[in-house]
Length: 129
Image (tube, rainbow, N blue to C red; front, side):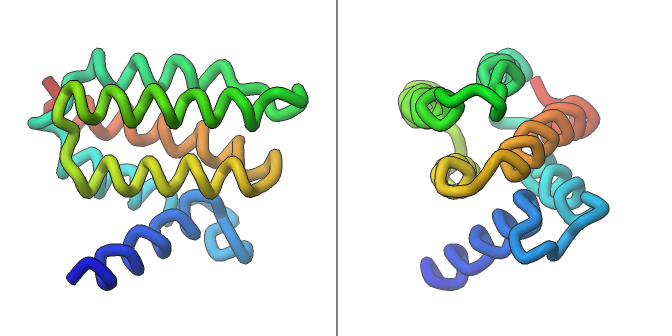
């Protein structure tokens, strides 16, 4: 069961970050955003998501410290996920997504930011608290 979940998370990350040019037009990334938003809309508040999104939106991959800032976003996300009881599947996905983004390049950072913008929009659409 865990192995299957990990494979799903890996596939979702591949689509979000467009690894191997699997989703150049972003439609799969948006589907992943909608999927996680529909699963978390009733459990997470918009304020909780906005706090994460605000930090992500400040990321500038043209500046050398963007990977450091991503790592700090990861630390804050992990802290808040425990503090607020984020759903484990969402926590695992976002944690893995941030780690993969740190390992990747500047293009993936843009996709990462776009994903969170789409996630936030769908979160609100699905009735996020």
